[in-house]
Length: 357
Image (cartoon, rainbow, N blue to C red; front, side):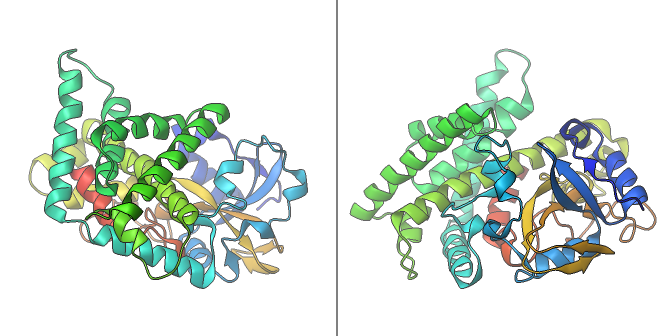
């Protein structure tokens, strides 16, 4: 294995990720030294066992980005800065007991959603989005359907009126654009959440926001607003990608399509296979080493950034020795994360209902 850092090519990660992961494993092993924009060094964790270790030990591999040993090199306009989350008061970037309390607040609020109503909302908005493009005879199913449905459903669960839900879709989509548009979208989401929080404090209802405000942990409105924004952002893109990846496999993989439409696989089994074969989120930051350690044969220094190679771990030959798809009830993939900072189980259930609609 060589010690040279690999420039993390975003284009290759999008177009041929499996090939890139194979090359990295061949040349560097399960933990690959990479360079981000501006030649910022990091480690990409591709090994299943190694990623399990990183995500399962939140003390050694912390979510606290203040530990990062590269802050002095990071300019204010660094493109990955929003994903690092420095000093952002949301559940994604808190640690320890406070994180556990915030995750419990979110999980309890989502678990309180009526599953029949959730399915009804998903079907209603799915029909509305399909009707809006039917007259043209063609559509971009990802941009005009998959990228819009999750936000519409979640906005209704939160307690937003439908007209606000449409504006939230635009704001969420803007966050995936350039830095200026992304900041504007983020600001719209925060302001919208603040208005809804004020309304629900004055008049609680049977919705996610009211249940979050009733939590016993004493979170401020600012903290709850940021968590609501994260729930929209973190819930929309992965769910949309899950839907889009499922559609792509149905249309391009004859074995997958035959298994699904021939009745050999249920929809749930087929969608679980997508989580193994084409994870909605392929790579994400991050963890920071709280002390010097070793991982996958590498010396990790205090403050080093580790990127979570979710799809790389899912395709690790050590857990897929015959190269076959992992289907049926095998849910040991990393598509929803693992450990203390995994996607809460009620959020996974909401995502599955929306994606299956």
